[in-house]
Every structure is written in C-alpha cells, then in structure tokens.
Image 1 (tube, rainbow, N blue to C red):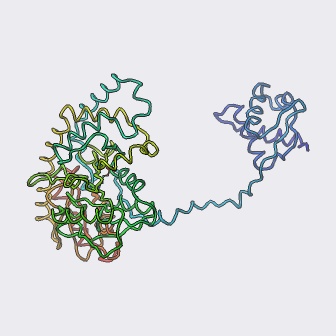
Image 2 (cartoon, rainbow, N blue to C red; image 1 turned 90 degrees about the horizontal axis):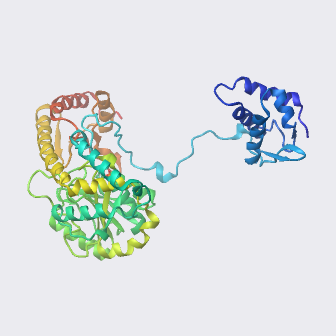
Image 3 (cartoon, rainbow, N blue to C red; image 1 turned 45 degrees about the vertical axis):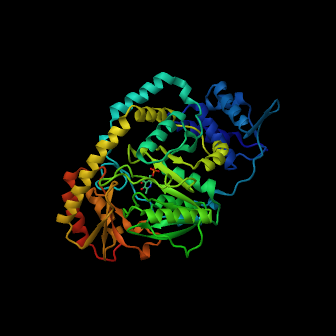
Amino acid sequence: VNIPDEALYGFLQNALDERGAQTRQRVLYHALQAAILTGKLQPQSRLPGSRLMAEALGVSRNTMNAALEQLAIEGYLTRSRQGTTVAILPSLPATSNVSCQPVALASRLRQLPSASRRDSPALQLTPGLPATNYFPLPVWRRLLDTVLRREGSLLLGYGDPAGEPRLRGAIARHLALSRGIHCDVSQIVITEGSLEGVRLCTQLLSQAGDVAWVEDPGYPGAKSVFMTAGLQVTGVPVDEEGLSLNMTSAAPTLIFTSPSHQYPLGAVMSASRRLALLDYARQQRAWIIEDDYDSEFRYSGEPVPAMLGMRDSARVVYLGTFSKTLFPSLRIGFMVLPSALAGAVNPVIASLLRGGHRPEQLALAHFIEEGHYARHLAAMRRLYRKRQQALRDALASEMRVAHQVRGGKGGLHLTVILKGVNDYAIIGQARRYQIAPGALSRLYLDPATAQHGLILGYGNTSASLYPGAIRTLNRLIEQTPRGQA
Ligand SMILES: Cc1ncc(COP(=O)(O)O)c(C=O)c1O
C-alpha cells in the first residue's frame, strides 16, 4: 500500500512548522509515530526513500534518516534494501473507547482510615511533630559531611539489609540505658520509621484472614497496614490502664499496642495488664507489636520500661522511631525482635529489605555515640514538659466549652474530649487560622459511634501561641452547629 506523498509531506511539514524548541529529528519522529499509532499510516504502507523525503521537507538526509532509524529500532517501521514500510502493530481500541475514569482502587484501600494532613511544620498544634527548629542542624551537617568524606563512594552501594551494624550497636546501647531492653545487635532491624516496622511484622508474622487487635482509639497507620494485608482488624477498648483485654473476641495473631503512652488517650498500661497480655500472647501464640513512639518524653516519675524487657522470651516485637526524638523526615526507626524470632527472620530479611540511606544511618550512629542524642533528648524533655504545662494552663483559662483533658504525663500531645461537637468540622475550619489539630473520632475504627475531640500537638508550637489558638478553637466550637461535617 502506498500513501499519497502529498498527504504524508503535508502533515510532516505542518509538524515542522510548529516545532518550537524541538529538534527537526524529534518532530519528524513524533509526527510519524503518531501517524502510525492513529492509523493515518496503514500497516505495511511504504514510505518514499529517505533522500526524497529529506528534499521534499527541506531537512538534511541525516536528520531524516535518524528519525526513521529510531522508529525502526522501536518497531514502528521495517527498513530493508527494498525500502521503508510501516510495521504491523497490535490493534488498539479506538481512543473514544478508552476510559478516562480514574482507576478504581481495591476495596480494601477505599476503607482505610483517613490520614491527617501534615503539610507544614508551621501549622500550630499539629499532632506528631517534634520541635524541628530545636534540632542541632549544624552538628547533623558536620556528621553527614564527615561520614561522606571518610567513606566516600563506598557508602553508595547497598548496605546490610538489616541496617548499618554501627547504628544498630549504638541503638542497642541506648536501649539498655533508657528502655530496660538488653539485646544483641542481631536482634535489631533498621526500618523506615515505625510504619515500615508494622508492615514487616505483618509480612513476617501473619497472613490474610488472621485477626489483628488494635487499640480503639488508636494509631491509624497500623490499621491501614493490617487492612491492606487482608487482616481482620478488631478494636479493643482503652481505659485508664490502657488496652483492656477482651478475651471474648476472636483470638488474634497480632496485637498492636502503645503501652508506655497510649495513642491518643495517654494511658500507661498497668503492670498487671502487661503481664496478663504477655501471658495471653504466649497461650494464643500471638505476637504483641509494642509501639514505643514517644516514651522518651515522660514528665513525671521514671521512664516506663518497655514490655519487651519484662519477661524472657516475651512474644513482643518492639518498634522504636527517631521521628519524634529527632525529626520525622529522617525516616529511620527500628524493630527489636526476640532472639528466637531474630534467628528465624535474619535469613529472609534480605528478601524484604535493601540496605539504604547509609550516610544518614552512619551519621545517626555518630550522633548517638558522641552524646548529641542524649543531650538533645534531655533538652527536648525540658522543653516539652514546659509546653505541656503551658497548654494545660491555656486550656484551663481559654477553653470555655465543656471538655476533658486526656493524654497523660508525657509525649507531644494532649487530647481534649468534647461532647456534642463534630471534631471533623472543627479541624476543617481551624486550618483557615493556621491551626491543625487532629480529630479524635478519626482514630476510632467506627467514627459513627466514636467520641469526638481534638488532638493538640504541642511539640512544634511555641507556648506563646497557645492562648490565642485555644481561644480560636473555642470560638469555632461554639459557632459550629453540632451535626455539621
Ligand atoms: C502512635 C504512633 N506511632 C508511631 C508513629 C511514628 O511513625 P513513623 O516512625 O513511621 O514516623 C506515630 C507518628 O505519628 C504515631 O503517632
């Protein structure tokens, strides 16, 4: 089949006339490719010789040839001594039949708890953000620089899949001093924050259809991971002693809990509950995932020891993170596995993880070894203690509507429980004033039957701003009709 030369030259010339900043070769390539894909150039039709085409279009023969050659390499044209013909391509549906609807998400993904937006550290009272402006950036810059200068390109390959051994050693020593956990480096796996730790526990210890218990209300990140893995997520109520054991619901494979500082209500799990939970996990052959996200910040009494260290051979995987103690975009956390589990996991860990972020991991190891970590923690503990007290004072003086303050004596947030208020409506309006608390109802499995309230993060907001922010929130609560979402 031959196509009329005039028609071919016509559309190629048009494309050349409108080429803008593109090279002639690129324009010819695209124009011919589009003509083939849309059927303007039929399969097996023969093109004129490249010399003729170049002359007719006023381009050099090299340019014409390069465009034709590229199309031949990609399989649009077939070139031989006999000439250049259009290749036979699989037929595509007419463009009018191609759906432009967004791809439908799997039903599991559509049911995920809504995640809070954490777009700017400048927003006031955002939960989960530490005081990023207090982080010793000059020290961090120096350590990163030292590590990169010393190790150079050696650090640019894959690292140990379980994380840099030096960082794991530094974490092991820190845990022994601060969390009562005595473990070997082989029991530690570095993760991209706790969330990846939850994902790994799910992959390693459960399968679709298994039951996962979560605290209700609780951390939405864990629920999302369990749901997407096809686990049956069961909410367990929380009271003043933390997660209340509910033996009547289906036996779990995974139990996710934050015993040192329940998120978001702040309870410290009592010793008797901890021992009962450890025993229950042993009987059921379930695994407890201990989320120790902010326990370094305790403002009364001693730090609460971790569950992992309470009993030998406890069925607990401990998750730690530097997101709250240093800064969240670092994306470095870690899991501590009981030694028997570590023995089983180590041979397969390389199938699940690639050792990356080596400069950051080594810089962090030095940061801990040189004492900067302990110093920063001590300074932040003092700062957050003051901020929590200042926020309590601001709530007492400025929050006129009936409320109840929860959140415990530690961490980076307080939770204010409100009656007859739609928390989701309030947080939507608060953003207009650069205030971004979290909505308590969204941390329950079923927001329809949930308590409402505001999660006020004081980590990254200076205390001088609390009275004004709480006054604004109080006004919004008073003005917002109850049912409005
Ligand atoms: C309850 C809870 N656990 C863990 C984390 C830490 O997550 P990551 O280490 O993935 O940043 C957060 C952060 O918001 C949290 O709120």
